[in-house]
Image (cartoon, helix red, strand yellow):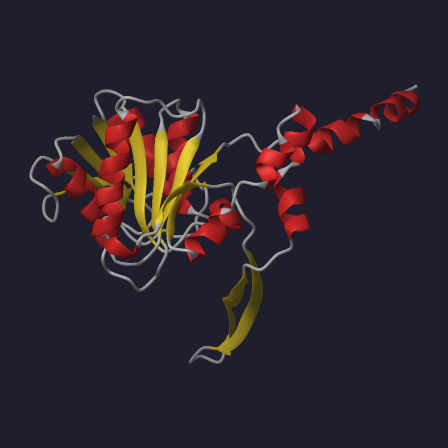
Length: 283
């Protein structure tokens, strides 16, 4: 397969090198376009008011890989690759392997997920890979799973306009409990800003906080079933599908399909009831 790989940890991150080199060694044609520095938590930001530069990187990757360091965001990297650096669209866009999890509502901030989503926006099947630890350094089990998943996808197709958000537990390969399809959970943070003073006596703030993963089942259902109810989906099936947050705790690899259409169908259904009132107001 022809693969485009990006990330948000930067071109020198161990995760992207392990992923790219593993897939190149498996016979895939790999092109890497990554930020030239750390770009975590940039979401789907784009560079509009500055030039974007790209430079070839000549070391650290498998000899068959062409790798570029890009001055832009993760989404910029994929846009630039598809619009200027590649001669033809890839078969798939991959992002990662991220150093840290992208579970639940993390995906709204994630540069890793946004890079993959940029591929989906362009109509290309895409997958985001994350290792659920900021300190663990062994990315090989995650890369090996990516290789296995791609082998399966060579004979199967992804859902239209959906990306797969894959999180791999940070444990040894023989400790991984299995692979499970999940729905997106809720991961809320208690965010606080630490007030500090720099050496010149000026005040600045540093974002800090702790993650809160224990949320009620009712809240999970409210967060996840807004579209399901309005579309006539199987609510019981949805309730019985575990969340990514839950299954990572049990050392499962989680695969969650995501989409860029954020329309709240249940909210739209409710708002349409207001429409008659607005018509009367307009008259």
